[in-house]
Length: 116
Image (tube, rainbow, N blue to C red; front, side):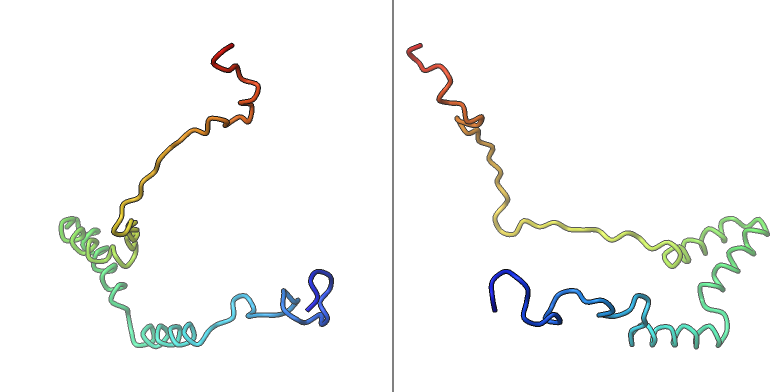
C-alpha cells in the first residue's frame, strides 16, 4: 500500500455514507425486552403501578406514615440511586513529585552568574 496519497480502492476502510447501523434501529435484545414489557402490561397492572396507587390512596386519606412507607418501597423504581465509582491505585500508591527545571524559562544563559 502506498504511503500517503489516495488509496487504490475508494471503498477500502474509512467512513462511507449510509454505512453502519441506522440510528434508532432495534437490536434483538431491545426487541425481546419490549416484547416482555408489552406482555406484562397486557396481563394487568404492574407491581409499581399498584404501589403508587395504594400510596396515593393512603396520602389522600391522610395516613401519611403508611404513604411514606410505600413511597420508600417504590422510590428505587422511580428514582434509582447513582452508582458509586471506586478509584483504586493498585498495590503501590501514586507518588507525585513536583520539580522545577532550573532552565524553565530557557533563559539561563542570560541570567547573572555567581561572579557578577
